[in-house]
Image 1 (cartoon, rainbow, N blue to C red):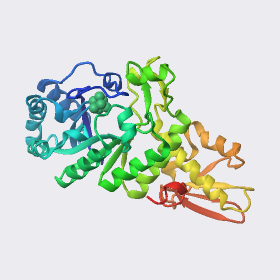
Image 2 (image 1 turned 45 degrees about the vertical axis):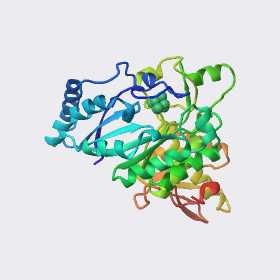
Image 3 (image 1 turned 90 degrees about the vertical axis):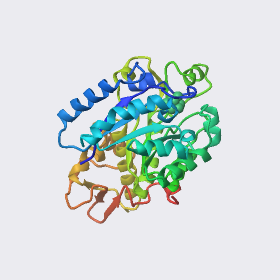
Image 4 (image 1 turned 180 degrees about the vertical axis):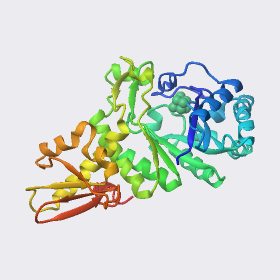
Length: 355
Ligand code: SF4
């Protein structure tokens, strides 16, 4: 069973400046800065009451935790320590910047039972980082991943494909880079233009246009494919559908959908079937089967894959289920041929195959 992650958002807390694209108040829907010890403990008890059987972790997200004044870090982490002693909480996770993770910081976090650190890498291209006003380099991100892992923490990387100056190739290189450096899990947040950001000003001035939903989903599918092949979990694709984000005028452009992760997985199955079909001599009378647990992903959101296969000349009217297939597999067949492939192991995207 996956651990229950109880999140506390500390929007922009500790951040030395505001990055070009960022508006954590909109992303998190949280206005106040730091939660009190009482609020943390009450909230944890409420979450535990709803899910008493799951191992639970407390997470501090939405800012640069390790750049908060040390006293505030101690207050936040201190509020969780009694819950750890009582074995209600297993450990703590935080997110922070790659340039705020030196050896002294890591020793402090280890002393306070922080077990997982999520690093805002965003891109491993220095030009993209510069244009986004991140204030750190790709080399600093890679060194931070290695240092955090060597110190015994679980380390994750957050990537943000589609920022100014980014390309699909750079985004794929970024995910390959964080995997090679030792990231143990990944979050992918394709670029969106949020209101009240410097990026919104650029967008309105016609100086930036992010990949749209269709292009962003295709890019994310290739990034997900690389992670699947490397056995690295992608624990989130796209911003959570907070109420604030759904309000009109909040997202001005970019790749956003409340079920983005589903769309990306469906794209992988779509591309796999197209690849398998290209190896079948005749596309007459095609039948498609998948594992029962993957039916909705294979069919696509609102059965969109079926429509798109039809439009590209593949007449697949229905997807059948077959429990003998693995969840990552589909089988495309007709009277003459049977072709089984996997979203993990099949060569769906040739340009990513050297990962
Ligand atoms: S991207 Fe991260 S470091 Fe930059 S302003 Fe947002 S929370 Fe702070």
